[in-house]
Image 1 (cartoon, rainbow, N blue to C red):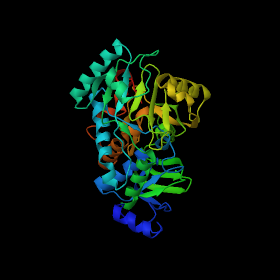
Image 2: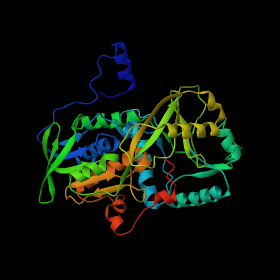
Image 3: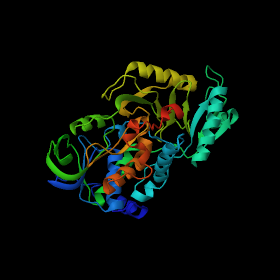
Image 4: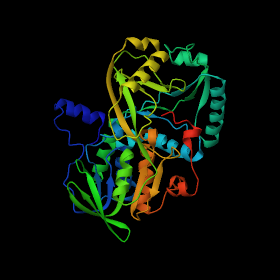
Length: 413
């Protein structure tokens, strides 16, 4: 059933008891043409685009927990595409363009709010870096502009403009903003299910059966599944899955923490990050202030926060917006991010002939979901990388072709 105003009115008259189940919960079959490991945004998008673009409907998506229960449901919902390297800019801008039409494509409201992303400028050095970035983005065909302090004051009422980190301006990407993370997962799941994909939750991958350098079956907590191709989109746990298949990935897993305040009246209409404090803030549709900072430096698979990070983020948020000091903290959580040596994703073929991977997005995974899924689907279906994904193959580390976004764009989440 399509979601539209007429069905909404009709179901309202009927007491909303006639809506069908959004997606099925089938028992796994013994064989599929392809198996996708990971039921977050990237895995769901991969399954959807495999079915829609390439007609592969005999697909299983395996999730050890529940859909969107990993990083997709544990991020701060921000999207933007102002990356420096042409390779990165092409992928992230593809993702943002797909997001801009995704609600209509999926017939599901993903609550895209392109409210603008502001990176504050605190000193002359950052101003020069912003000018350099604006030139790079223009060369890459990506939007972005520098605005002055007066415009920042107008856009961000309540911002402390003359504190320890005085605000001289900001770099603004107007198309940046936020999206409802659960809606992205649910929208992709519903659309993939309608195309015939089997979405199997509470199904943990426990190993692989191999023959002649290929995977012939996936062993799971719900039985053995034979398959011709395997796609992996498990973010911080990508290294664990890779070791099951007999190879190692050049990634490390870290916690990235975030938190929200109690809901308050509309106050902050944009997403803002301060390079001085290292903290970024936006306000949700419900009125909560979403706050986050830098990732934890130690390796971890934990999904819980720590008090030192709470203290750092909250004190920095109050330094940016002094009026926040009267608010109470409501929730606090962490996700597991996968960091590659050059802070750029790994897309495409693995040392196992029929296994393809999508990982290494680090703190940029949510904003890249549509592109990551589309590019992995292409690789699985064609057996070779899409032209936009080719620079992000594993062989770049051997050939010293790094795409060092950590140094170029600073990875401001």
